Length: 203
Image (cartoon, rainbow, N blue to C red):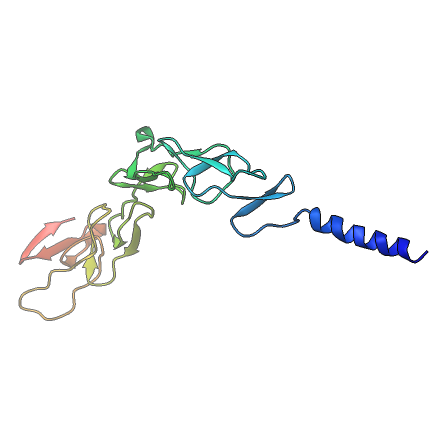
């Protein structure tokens, strides 16, 4: 009567050793499928067939114009991005089998978002304002008002505020209109005359 439970215990241990429990999780760079841990495909390759008892995971390289950036079990590679010239885009960096194409905007324009799907012209700093920071391919122009003693008379995405011209015979600090060069001499009825190089000129 004692032998029967003991025999059952031994047979249970034997069956467990021959048929282990299927894994519930896998190591890094593996994935679980059909109760089996298979290796992920390396970057630049896509999955063709899962592994079996006798074969490893089968992968194939991405075709030209495609990429996969990480280890994966994807059946299809991603298409490289198209830099549409009709949207003002051009290629900055060609894509590879593991990286996507990087687009930038044409000169004088910048991206409208971090993904750079389209472009917009750089903003101009209006008269009385100068460029504090020039625009880049991903950021717009930053303008600042001209401070006392400086001026800007043009709309520009490049020009900074310029210092006023001093009178040669005077060391006094120049005065106030940020839109013009020279010191105001007199302003009758809103018409200011500015003096530069010893001459008067009307506004």
